[in-house]
Amino acid sequence: MAWNRTSDLINGWSELPQGKRNLVWNMFMGPTMRRLLVDWEQEAPLTVAALRAEAGRDLGEPDYQELINGLLEESPDFAAIWARQDVRARQEGVKRFQHPELGRFDLEYTAFQVAEQPSLRLYLYTPADKRTAMKLREAAQRVNRPS
Image (cartoon, rainbow, N blue to C red; front, side):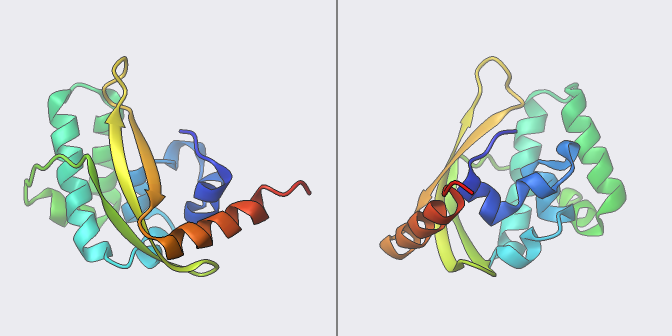
């Protein structure tokens, strides 16, 4: 998984163990996503439905099996949503955040499938409005300054 410094400021990827730097795992087991996402209750089922859609294309993929089995064991919320058996691909949308340092902001995202490795996705996040663009520009300037 790769990210830039602004994404790390928002999501805290570098603070997670390498094997846990996954959007779905972070949604249910990470230390911050439940607090950061304004609409976590709506986002979580959409995330699980998208995982079902992606994993359904290649059920033999060990990465999917490890992630799904681990979440079924560790997260009652994931297990309950998984049991609904909803399947829905997600290529784009808006995520609304309430961040302890940056405050309230919205990001539009688009997901791209990596052709050579179908289990990988590239997520591109962009500011959904001018207020968010300004906040992220200021945050990027802070985190990109040389120490």
